[in-house]
Amino acid sequence: MAIERTFSIIKPDATARNLTGAINALIEQSGLRIIAQRRVRITRAQAETFYAVHRARPFFGELVDFMISGPVVVQVLEGENAIAKYRDIMGATDPAKAAAGTIRKVHANSIGENSVHGSDAADTAANEIASFLPETTSSAKASCGGVRGFGASQPALRACRLIGY
Ligand code: GDP
Image (cartoon, rainbow, N blue to C red; front, side):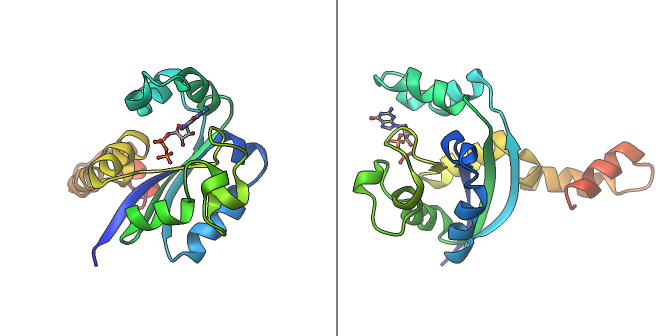
């Protein structure tokens, strides 16, 4: 089976309740590796673009307001079959319908405040990772490879060292 990467968000309801570590423990226990993460506040424009597919749904405004209501933790997860595996351990969108032991069953407040996001397919995973953690993509790695040559500027070298390339 292929090693994949998927994109995860620990949502504001979970960061507000200090659940980042508890959720990360469930991710790591599943065998997925957290290869990058950053705690950020996303903008209204980012949230509207991220959930654009739901723009016509009645809960869209509420969803965007929720996603910008506090910090989130954006993550890249890696492992065998990572996209489907993370969807499995997240559990159903509505925690009332989620299987026992899943992140949403254990931690989510409601169908809206449901603690985590995970990409649903390979193309969305790639786009979401490139939007929120671009330094983990192969093009960032390639450009860091390029600046290692003689004559690269000190700031460029420092930036590449900081992100581990
Ligand atoms: P997911 O892939 O399991 O996250 O579910 P969807 O892509 O269907 O929905 C995206 C997000 O919209 C969910 O994770 C919820 O945060 C939110 N959402 C979905 N359905 C509802 C709803 O009926 N009410 C509210 N308030 N939010 C919802």
